[in-house]
Image (cartoon, rainbow, N blue to C red; front, side, top):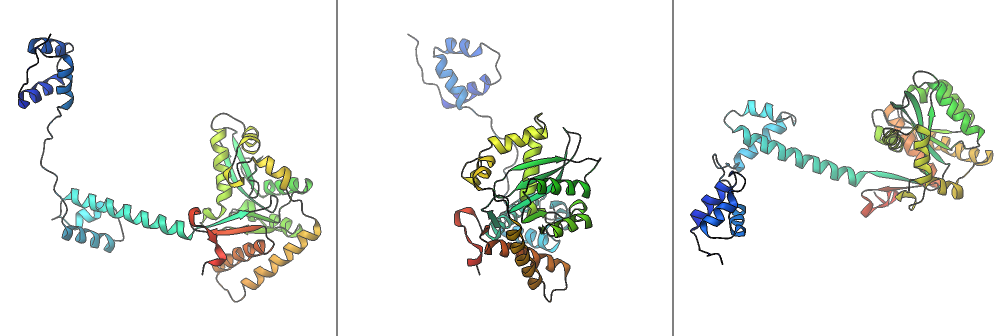
Length: 338
Protein backbone atom coordinates (compact mmCIF):
# COMPACT_ATOMS: atom_id res chain seq x y z
CA UNK A 1 0.00 0.00 0.00
CA UNK A 2 1.33 3.43 -0.96
CA UNK A 3 2.58 5.69 1.84
CA UNK A 4 0.52 8.89 2.02
CA UNK A 5 2.49 11.83 3.39
CA UNK A 6 1.25 15.35 3.97
CA UNK A 7 3.39 17.86 2.12
CA UNK A 8 3.57 21.63 2.81
CA UNK A 9 1.21 23.85 0.84
CA UNK A 10 4.11 25.68 -0.86
CA UNK A 11 5.45 22.35 -2.14
CA UNK A 12 2.04 21.33 -3.46
CA UNK A 13 1.62 24.65 -5.28
CA UNK A 14 5.10 24.52 -6.82
CA UNK A 15 4.63 20.91 -8.00
CA UNK A 16 1.13 21.65 -9.31
CA UNK A 17 2.43 24.65 -11.27
CA UNK A 18 5.25 22.57 -12.74
CA UNK A 19 2.86 19.81 -13.81
CA UNK A 20 0.89 22.25 -15.98
CA UNK A 21 3.82 22.41 -18.44
CA UNK A 22 5.54 19.10 -17.69
CA UNK A 23 5.94 16.47 -20.47
CA UNK A 24 3.51 13.59 -20.82
CA UNK A 25 4.02 10.84 -18.22
CA UNK A 26 5.53 13.15 -15.58
CA UNK A 27 2.46 12.93 -13.38
CA UNK A 28 2.74 9.14 -12.92
CA UNK A 29 6.50 9.17 -12.35
CA UNK A 30 6.19 11.96 -9.77
CA UNK A 31 3.49 10.06 -7.86
CA UNK A 32 5.70 6.96 -7.69
CA UNK A 33 8.70 8.99 -6.54
CA UNK A 34 6.80 10.78 -3.78
CA UNK A 35 4.89 7.67 -2.74
CA UNK A 36 1.46 9.19 -3.32
CA UNK A 37 -1.44 8.36 -5.63
CA UNK A 38 -1.88 9.89 -9.08
CA UNK A 39 -5.25 11.16 -7.90
CA UNK A 40 -3.52 13.33 -5.30
CA UNK A 41 -1.10 14.69 -7.90
CA UNK A 42 -4.01 15.55 -10.20
CA UNK A 43 -5.70 17.41 -7.33
CA UNK A 44 -2.54 19.49 -6.76
CA UNK A 45 -2.43 20.34 -10.44
CA UNK A 46 -6.10 21.25 -10.60
CA UNK A 47 -6.02 23.52 -7.54
CA UNK A 48 -2.94 25.42 -8.69
CA UNK A 49 -3.50 28.53 -10.78
CA UNK A 50 -1.09 30.92 -12.40
CA UNK A 51 -0.42 34.06 -10.43
CA UNK A 52 -1.81 37.16 -12.12
CA UNK A 53 0.88 39.57 -13.16
CA UNK A 54 0.79 43.31 -13.62
CA UNK A 55 -0.51 46.16 -11.55
CA UNK A 56 -3.73 45.89 -9.62
CA UNK A 57 -6.65 47.35 -11.55
CA UNK A 58 -7.37 50.85 -10.34
CA UNK A 59 -10.94 51.94 -9.80
CA UNK A 60 -12.70 55.06 -11.05
CA UNK A 61 -13.47 57.71 -8.46
CA UNK A 62 -16.89 59.33 -8.35
CA UNK A 63 -15.43 62.73 -9.26
CA UNK A 64 -13.76 61.25 -12.35
CA UNK A 65 -16.97 59.54 -13.39
CA UNK A 66 -18.92 62.80 -13.08
CA UNK A 67 -16.26 64.65 -15.07
CA UNK A 68 -16.32 62.04 -17.86
CA UNK A 69 -20.14 61.98 -17.94
CA UNK A 70 -20.32 65.78 -18.10
CA UNK A 71 -17.85 65.88 -20.99
CA UNK A 72 -19.71 63.06 -22.78
CA UNK A 73 -23.03 64.94 -22.59
CA UNK A 74 -21.36 68.23 -23.53
CA UNK A 75 -19.89 66.72 -26.72
CA UNK A 76 -23.17 65.09 -27.78
CA UNK A 77 -22.65 61.48 -26.62
CA UNK A 78 -19.67 60.49 -28.83
CA UNK A 79 -17.32 57.51 -28.50
CA UNK A 80 -14.43 57.43 -26.07
CA UNK A 81 -11.73 58.97 -28.27
CA UNK A 82 -13.00 62.59 -28.19
CA UNK A 83 -13.33 62.31 -24.40
CA UNK A 84 -9.79 60.96 -24.10
CA UNK A 85 -8.49 63.98 -26.02
CA UNK A 86 -10.45 66.44 -23.89
CA UNK A 87 -9.43 64.86 -20.55
CA UNK A 88 -5.69 64.09 -20.84
CA UNK A 89 -5.30 63.95 -17.05
CA UNK A 90 -7.73 60.99 -16.74
CA UNK A 91 -6.60 57.44 -17.41
CA UNK A 92 -7.62 56.15 -20.86
CA UNK A 93 -8.86 52.86 -19.44
CA UNK A 94 -11.08 54.66 -16.94
CA UNK A 95 -12.63 56.79 -19.68
CA UNK A 96 -13.35 53.76 -21.86
CA UNK A 97 -14.97 51.86 -18.98
CA UNK A 98 -17.16 54.80 -17.98
CA UNK A 99 -18.24 55.55 -21.57
CA UNK A 100 -19.10 51.88 -22.13
CA UNK A 101 -21.25 51.80 -18.98
CA UNK A 102 -22.96 55.09 -19.90
CA UNK A 103 -23.80 53.79 -23.38
CA UNK A 104 -25.18 50.58 -21.91
CA UNK A 105 -27.40 52.51 -19.48
CA UNK A 106 -28.64 54.83 -22.24
CA UNK A 107 -29.49 51.89 -24.50
CA UNK A 108 -31.34 50.19 -21.65
CA UNK A 109 -33.44 53.32 -21.02
CA UNK A 110 -34.18 53.67 -24.74
CA UNK A 111 -35.32 50.05 -25.06
CA UNK A 112 -37.53 50.40 -21.97
CA UNK A 113 -39.12 53.56 -23.35
CA UNK A 114 -39.69 51.92 -26.73
CA UNK A 115 -41.31 48.87 -25.15
CA UNK A 116 -43.61 50.99 -23.01
CA UNK A 117 -44.75 53.14 -25.93
CA UNK A 118 -44.85 50.58 -28.75
CA UNK A 119 -48.27 50.09 -30.32
CA UNK A 120 -49.09 46.69 -31.78
CA UNK A 121 -51.92 46.16 -34.25
CA UNK A 122 -53.81 42.87 -34.07
CA UNK A 123 -55.83 42.17 -37.23
CA UNK A 124 -58.77 39.89 -36.47
CA UNK A 125 -60.01 39.08 -39.98
CA UNK A 126 -57.88 37.69 -42.84
CA UNK A 127 -58.39 39.64 -46.05
CA UNK A 128 -58.96 43.03 -44.40
CA UNK A 129 -55.40 44.38 -44.16
CA UNK A 130 -52.43 43.42 -46.33
CA UNK A 131 -48.90 44.77 -46.59
CA UNK A 132 -46.27 44.53 -49.30
CA UNK A 133 -42.61 45.34 -49.82
CA UNK A 134 -39.90 44.77 -52.38
CA UNK A 135 -37.10 42.22 -51.98
CA UNK A 136 -34.09 41.10 -53.96
CA UNK A 137 -33.62 37.35 -53.66
CA UNK A 138 -30.07 36.46 -54.68
CA UNK A 139 -30.91 32.77 -55.03
CA UNK A 140 -33.60 33.66 -57.60
CA UNK A 141 -31.55 36.34 -59.33
CA UNK A 142 -34.18 39.07 -59.37
CA UNK A 143 -36.62 41.34 -57.53
CA UNK A 144 -39.86 40.21 -55.95
CA UNK A 145 -42.89 41.83 -54.37
CA UNK A 146 -43.50 40.12 -51.05
CA UNK A 147 -47.08 40.34 -49.78
CA UNK A 148 -48.45 39.35 -46.39
CA UNK A 149 -51.98 39.21 -45.03
CA UNK A 150 -51.88 40.64 -41.52
CA UNK A 151 -54.88 38.61 -40.40
CA UNK A 152 -53.58 35.16 -41.36
CA UNK A 153 -49.85 35.97 -41.81
CA UNK A 154 -49.90 34.21 -45.17
CA UNK A 155 -46.90 35.17 -47.30
CA UNK A 156 -46.71 35.35 -51.10
CA UNK A 157 -43.85 36.27 -53.43
CA UNK A 158 -44.46 37.74 -56.90
CA UNK A 159 -41.54 37.76 -59.37
CA UNK A 160 -40.98 41.08 -61.12
CA UNK A 161 -41.01 41.03 -64.92
CA UNK A 162 -38.17 43.49 -65.49
CA UNK A 163 -34.70 43.83 -64.07
CA UNK A 164 -35.97 45.83 -61.10
CA UNK A 165 -39.20 46.49 -59.24
CA UNK A 166 -41.52 49.13 -60.74
CA UNK A 167 -45.14 50.27 -60.60
CA UNK A 168 -46.21 47.81 -63.31
CA UNK A 169 -45.22 44.93 -61.07
CA UNK A 170 -47.35 46.41 -58.28
CA UNK A 171 -50.33 46.73 -60.64
CA UNK A 172 -49.83 43.10 -61.67
CA UNK A 173 -50.12 41.98 -58.04
CA UNK A 174 -53.29 44.05 -57.55
CA UNK A 175 -54.77 42.64 -60.77
CA UNK A 176 -54.17 39.07 -59.60
CA UNK A 177 -55.83 39.82 -56.27
CA UNK A 178 -58.82 41.36 -58.03
CA UNK A 179 -59.24 38.33 -60.26
CA UNK A 180 -59.27 36.12 -57.17
CA UNK A 181 -61.72 38.44 -55.40
CA UNK A 182 -59.17 39.02 -52.61
CA UNK A 183 -58.53 42.77 -52.79
CA UNK A 184 -58.06 44.02 -49.20
CA UNK A 185 -59.77 46.99 -47.62
CA UNK A 186 -56.38 48.44 -46.61
CA UNK A 187 -52.98 47.95 -48.25
CA UNK A 188 -49.89 49.00 -46.30
CA UNK A 189 -46.61 49.92 -48.00
CA UNK A 190 -43.60 52.15 -47.55
CA UNK A 191 -43.09 55.29 -49.65
CA UNK A 192 -41.25 53.66 -52.54
CA UNK A 193 -42.15 54.86 -56.04
CA UNK A 194 -43.35 51.39 -57.18
CA UNK A 195 -46.10 51.59 -54.55
CA UNK A 196 -46.92 55.31 -54.70
CA UNK A 197 -46.90 55.94 -58.47
CA UNK A 198 -49.90 57.70 -60.02
CA UNK A 199 -51.11 54.58 -61.84
CA UNK A 200 -51.04 52.57 -58.61
CA UNK A 201 -52.86 55.35 -56.80
CA UNK A 202 -55.47 55.42 -59.57
CA UNK A 203 -56.07 51.67 -59.33
CA UNK A 204 -56.50 51.82 -55.56
CA UNK A 205 -58.92 54.73 -55.81
CA UNK A 206 -60.94 53.05 -58.55
CA UNK A 207 -61.20 49.83 -56.55
CA UNK A 208 -61.77 51.58 -53.21
CA UNK A 209 -58.63 50.41 -51.42
CA UNK A 210 -57.25 52.58 -48.64
CA UNK A 211 -53.49 53.10 -48.93
CA UNK A 212 -51.75 52.98 -45.53
CA UNK A 213 -48.32 54.55 -46.07
CA UNK A 214 -45.63 54.56 -43.41
CA UNK A 215 -44.00 57.78 -42.29
CA UNK A 216 -40.83 58.77 -44.18
CA UNK A 217 -37.76 56.93 -42.89
CA UNK A 218 -39.76 54.86 -40.39
CA UNK A 219 -39.59 51.28 -41.75
CA UNK A 220 -40.90 49.91 -38.44
CA UNK A 221 -44.38 51.09 -39.44
CA UNK A 222 -44.31 48.57 -42.27
CA UNK A 223 -42.77 45.99 -39.96
CA UNK A 224 -45.04 43.11 -40.94
CA UNK A 225 -43.87 43.36 -44.56
CA UNK A 226 -40.25 43.65 -43.40
CA UNK A 227 -40.71 40.46 -41.36
CA UNK A 228 -42.22 38.69 -44.37
CA UNK A 229 -39.20 39.64 -46.48
CA UNK A 230 -36.88 38.42 -43.71
CA UNK A 231 -38.68 35.06 -43.44
CA UNK A 232 -38.50 34.56 -47.19
CA UNK A 233 -34.82 35.45 -47.42
CA UNK A 234 -33.87 33.07 -44.61
CA UNK A 235 -35.56 30.11 -46.27
CA UNK A 236 -34.41 30.82 -49.84
CA UNK A 237 -30.85 31.22 -48.53
CA UNK A 238 -30.99 27.51 -47.64
CA UNK A 239 -31.56 26.57 -51.28
CA UNK A 240 -35.34 26.60 -51.69
CA UNK A 241 -37.14 28.54 -54.42
CA UNK A 242 -39.44 31.42 -53.50
CA UNK A 243 -42.60 29.37 -54.16
CA UNK A 244 -41.28 26.51 -52.02
CA UNK A 245 -40.48 28.97 -49.23
CA UNK A 246 -44.05 30.30 -49.33
CA UNK A 247 -45.41 26.75 -49.05
CA UNK A 248 -43.26 26.18 -45.98
CA UNK A 249 -44.43 29.44 -44.41
CA UNK A 250 -48.13 29.08 -45.25
CA UNK A 251 -48.79 25.34 -45.00
CA UNK A 252 -46.33 24.20 -42.33
CA UNK A 253 -45.19 27.13 -40.14
CA UNK A 254 -47.10 27.22 -36.84
CA UNK A 255 -47.43 30.76 -35.49
CA UNK A 256 -48.07 31.90 -31.93
CA UNK A 257 -50.00 35.02 -33.06
CA UNK A 258 -52.72 32.85 -34.59
CA UNK A 259 -52.93 30.31 -31.74
CA UNK A 260 -50.29 27.96 -33.17
CA UNK A 261 -52.11 27.37 -36.41
CA UNK A 262 -50.80 27.65 -39.95
CA UNK A 263 -51.79 30.53 -42.20
CA UNK A 264 -53.69 28.21 -44.55
CA UNK A 265 -55.72 26.79 -41.66
CA UNK A 266 -56.76 30.29 -40.56
CA UNK A 267 -57.70 31.39 -44.08
CA UNK A 268 -59.78 28.27 -44.75
CA UNK A 269 -62.05 29.21 -41.84
CA UNK A 270 -61.87 33.00 -41.49
CA UNK A 271 -60.91 34.55 -44.86
CA UNK A 272 -63.25 37.46 -45.63
CA UNK A 273 -64.10 38.27 -49.27
CA UNK A 274 -65.74 41.68 -49.27
CA UNK A 275 -68.74 42.63 -51.35
CA UNK A 276 -68.92 45.95 -53.21
CA UNK A 277 -71.37 47.28 -50.61
CA UNK A 278 -69.06 46.41 -47.70
CA UNK A 279 -66.07 47.89 -49.49
CA UNK A 280 -67.97 51.09 -50.31
CA UNK A 281 -69.11 51.49 -46.70
CA UNK A 282 -65.61 51.12 -45.28
CA UNK A 283 -63.97 53.26 -47.97
CA UNK A 284 -66.33 56.17 -47.46
CA UNK A 285 -65.95 56.00 -43.67
CA UNK A 286 -62.15 55.96 -43.93
CA UNK A 287 -62.01 58.84 -46.43
CA UNK A 288 -64.28 60.95 -44.23
CA UNK A 289 -62.13 60.19 -41.17
CA UNK A 290 -58.94 61.14 -43.04
CA UNK A 291 -60.41 64.41 -44.28
CA UNK A 292 -61.63 65.34 -40.81
CA UNK A 293 -58.31 64.43 -39.18
CA UNK A 294 -56.29 66.57 -41.59
CA UNK A 295 -58.37 69.74 -41.24
CA UNK A 296 -56.19 72.71 -40.34
CA UNK A 297 -52.89 70.78 -40.64
CA UNK A 298 -50.31 72.30 -42.99
CA UNK A 299 -47.27 70.08 -42.39
CA UNK A 300 -47.12 67.09 -44.75
CA UNK A 301 -45.51 65.01 -42.03
CA UNK A 302 -48.29 65.76 -39.55
CA UNK A 303 -50.88 65.12 -42.28
CA UNK A 304 -49.44 61.64 -42.80
CA UNK A 305 -49.57 60.96 -39.07
CA UNK A 306 -53.19 62.10 -38.93
CA UNK A 307 -54.03 59.97 -41.97
CA UNK A 308 -52.56 56.83 -40.39
CA UNK A 309 -54.41 57.43 -37.14
CA UNK A 310 -57.69 57.96 -39.01
CA UNK A 311 -57.27 54.69 -40.93
CA UNK A 312 -56.54 52.71 -37.78
CA UNK A 313 -59.46 54.34 -35.98
CA UNK A 314 -61.79 53.36 -38.83
CA UNK A 315 -60.53 49.77 -38.77
CA UNK A 316 -61.20 49.70 -35.02
CA UNK A 317 -64.70 51.09 -35.48
CA UNK A 318 -65.46 48.20 -37.86
CA UNK A 319 -64.02 45.73 -35.29
CA UNK A 320 -61.34 44.60 -37.74
CA UNK A 321 -58.35 45.37 -35.52
CA UNK A 322 -57.36 45.94 -31.91
CA UNK A 323 -54.45 48.15 -30.91
CA UNK A 324 -52.43 47.45 -27.78
CA UNK A 325 -49.59 49.43 -26.28
CA UNK A 326 -46.56 48.38 -24.26
CA UNK A 327 -44.96 45.04 -23.48
CA UNK A 328 -47.14 41.91 -23.99
CA UNK A 329 -47.00 41.18 -20.25
CA UNK A 330 -48.90 44.39 -19.51
CA UNK A 331 -50.94 45.00 -22.65
CA UNK A 332 -53.93 47.30 -22.40
CA UNK A 333 -56.09 48.78 -25.10
CA UNK A 334 -54.50 51.83 -26.66
CA UNK A 335 -57.64 53.90 -26.32
CA UNK A 336 -57.60 53.39 -22.53
CA UNK A 337 -54.19 55.08 -22.24
CA UNK A 338 -54.36 58.83 -21.77
